[in-house]
Structures are given as structure tokens and as C-alpha cells.
Amino acid sequence: MIRRRDFDQVLAVVRRSGVAEDLEKILSPEGRGRPRGLSVEFFLTGAILTAVQEKTLTFVNIYETLTGDLARSLQVAIGVRVKSGSGRSQPISIRQVRYLFSAIENRLTAREEATPGFSEEMRDLRRQSLEGIIDRLIAATIPSGYERTISVAVDGTGVESFAKSKWRRVLQPKDETAAATERGADEIRAASDLRGEDPEGSNDETVTLGRERYSADRDARAGYRTKTYEKKSTFFFGYDLTAAVAVPRVGGSDIGPKLLVGMRVAPAAQSVTAPALALLEHLLANDYDIDEVIADRAYGYRVPEHWALPLLELGLRQVQDIHPNDHGPRYHDGVVIIDGAPHCPSTPERLWNIPRPARLSVGVLSKTATESERLVHEREKRAIKRFNELIAERETYAFVRHQNAREGAKDPAKARFICPARAGKLRCANCPLSQDYPASTPAVENPPTVDPPRSCRQETVMVPGAALIKLAQKEYWGSIPWQARYGRRSHVEAMFGNLRNPATQNISRLFCRVVGLVKTSLMLSFEAVAANLRLVQQWAWFFRGDSEPPASDPAEDHGFEEIDADGQVRLVDPDAYRSPPG
Image (cartoon, rainbow, N blue to C red):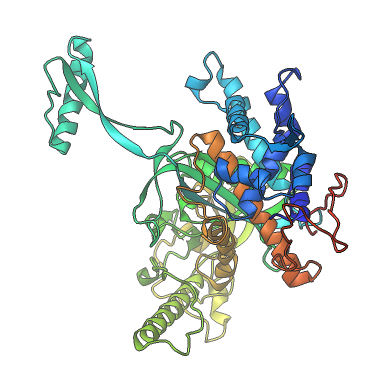
């Protein structure tokens, strides 16, 4: 049985978001039509409550939440139980739950075959409406006093569609157009050779042009994901979920629970960076003061026009890991660019490419650890120590940023740097001033004395943005300060863990039994709202002590009525809805 206060809390979230009112207007723009037994407001509340109860988001479970898990007086009050002609109350039918959700999808879908005659602008408006609904539902879970001066960790994960996909051959009549057949003949033979098929097709009337993937879910696409113990393959068919999680700034105050502040859902194999950039623009427009964006190598590996440059235009710094293909030296006018930072041209070759350990920290070894576990632990510690030593050594050869580009400059990413010898980090024959440094200061071996580059002759050197922007970061990649900044990315991984954990939201292929972008996105937003509410309640209980444990004082089932301390039926008060702790 669901307690009255839990129902009130979720209903308050739905009402604060204002989503139900807008959906009612979308479903009935002129306010006409036959009245529905189930309102959008209470459908959304029931769906989120189902996710809060850690149940699979099926129509049967949502229906059971509304008509079976609530007190009967509350069911009557919200209209999911009505009186029949005999005087007894009867619950609404499950058909009304299915009908309402399908009606919402019909009003929000932007799929071409479902919106004949629509212009692309009209379809864009529908996409924006769906994103706005998700944004407002998530924003309604954020406590009113939540810190807005934050950094943001961004990442993506694959969500499998409920429907599977299969391959089928594409056939075309031989006599359709000879020209088209001739144009595709070479491609047909090449594809057939790879598959070991007969290029002539299945019979005398048709020719096989290739294969296509088909599925009951017309919005889902085949995509790539990281292979793990639970995910046995890198292939999946479904959607990409991009999430933004609020994390504290380095050296800043604690922000409390690390909540999901935004999400985007798109068919798999689409742009990785576009949803993340859209999320960041949305957060900046909603009074979030963001300084840094922490992202993994999947984002930083993209061309600067798709990630680094838009971040710069938004006034955001990136904190990122570096893809293996981006490691190593790049040369520009006598300066060696290594991992996004300019270095002395005499930087030893052994420091050009420093492989990063799989993990940058190891925990305390258990007292009951086996001998093999101890060996692995020691090996990881040695690898981390060696990596830190090499990074610290190479950083002494790095130039020191002296001045950024002026506001409004044609090249906003360019910067002026000071050579490490003039900055006091090295002793170099090309810098007489450095000869007075302490003897313990490292010395440059074999500096270019004959026709030295411009960086060795000038006090400062300007490096254009094209050589820096893709991998530029505030802290030196791999250094201890960089590790502290990049380590905050674990909060978005923890959020994905919350969403995928079988004991909590359990987002997997069968977490909802619906197909399509609109329905899947809404179901994912219900799970995200439930996760945020749980994190807020747990944080309030553990760290502030102003809320009782979620599992304490359970409600008793007295014939589907909630009884107060005096044994009386506790009636619903529609004006007494509490907000989340905050």
C-alpha cells in the first residue's frame, strides 16, 4: 500500500512542473470531447509512483498502482474509482491508461509517417514540446534551495528498445529501371561477395539490392555501447540517453545530493555531442552558473566544431580524458603540442606519449584478500605511481599560459605562452636568466642553439587556437589537479548505476513494454524523477536528519484504507501536498 504522504509528494512534483495542464490543452485544444475518467495529472502521478515503488513500468503495474495500491477514499477523490448504478464503486478500466498514453504519443510524435502533411518546423515544435515536458518534470524534483553554482558531468548510455530488430533482404523487380540496376551492380556484387550470397537474387523476377534492418520500433536504431560484464556485446538496438548531473566545483562548497538536472533521449547512432550541448544551453538559460563540463573521451575526440568550439562560445571549460589517437606530439612553429599543451621543443621523446593506467586510484586492500589480489593491487599502485612521476616530469617542459585571447578576438581560442625556462621550471642554454636558478632545477638536454625556433628567442609566443582548442584544459592532463577535476565524472556514472540497478530503477530492455521515441522518453523521465526523489530523501535523512527513514513507520493495510492513530479513516486533503525536502 502506498502512503498518502508519498502520493502527495509525487503529485506536488507533477503540479509544480505544470506538465499536466499543458498536456490536457494539447489533447483537447478547444476543451471539447468526452470527459476522461483518468486525468493526465493522476496518470503521471501513478506512473512516477510505480517507478518510485521500483516496479516495472508496464500499463498493468501503473493501473495496479492507481486502483490497487492507494486507499479507496483517495481513489474516489482522484477519480480512478467511480460509483456504479448499484451504489458500489468500481475502478476505471486499464484500457483508459493505455488510451491516454497513446493519445499523448499521437500529439507529440514527430515521425514522418505519423505526421503526414506536417512541415519540418511543425515537427521541430513537437520535438521541443517533448523535451520541454521532460525538462520540467526533472526540474520539479530539484529542491528550491539547491545550489545553482555548479560544474556539470555529462555522459551517455544506451537504452535497449523493447522491440528487437532483424535483417531482411531488399528486392527490386528486374524490369523496373535498367539504369538503376546498372548503377547498383558493383555495390550488389561487393555486398554479396562479403556475405557469400548469390548476387542474382532469389528468383528470375527480382534482384537482391542488399539488406535492411526492420523492427516494430520504428524510431529505434542500431548503436554502439561499451561492452561490460552485464552487456555481453558492443551492439544494441534502441536509444541513446544523454544525462547531465550537477557536481560541486573544485574547492567549492558541497551541493548536497548529486542530482540529474537534465536528460535527452534520441535514436541510437546519432550525434553524441548535440544532445549534450542542447542540455548545457538549457541549463544556462535556467539560471545555472556552470564553470566546467566534465566528459569522457567520446566527447573530446570529436572535431572542435562539434564540441570544443561550442563549449568555448558558451563560456564553458572542458575537463576531459584524451583519446589514444590524440596522444603524442604535434608541431607548430617550433613548439611541440602534446596532449593539448605546448611544450619545449627539446622535450625528451620518452615523454611524448605516456599511457594512462586503467584506474587512477585504488582502494584499500581487504584484510581477507588472496595472494593474487594482493599482487594485482601492488601492480596497480606501481603503475599509478609511475604514471604520476612521468606526468610530473613532462609538465616541467610545458609552457606556462600568460594571456588568453581578448574578448571579441577573431580567434577566441588562441593564447600567449611563456617558455618553461623563463617561467622558472627549467635551466636552458637559450635562456641566460635560467642559469641563476638553483642547481636542483632540471636542465634542458641538447637545446637547439643553431637557428633556434621563435619560442626560444622570444619572451612569449602566441599559439593559435587551431593547435590548442580540441584538447585545451585548465589543468595539465594527467596531473594530480587534473585527476581531482576529472574524478567528479564518477557522479554521472553513479547516476547511471542508480538507473540500471535492479534494486532501484532497473532500466533494461524490459523496464517498459512500449516502443517509440515519445513513449520510451516519457518512461525514462518517470524513472529519472523517481531516482532524483529517492536521492533527495536519502540525503535529507542521512546528512540533515530532518526526515525519517523511507522504510520506517510503514502504512497498514486496513481494507485499502489508511487509518490514523485514533482508528479513523484518514481523508485526503487536496491542499496539503508537501514538497520534497529542500
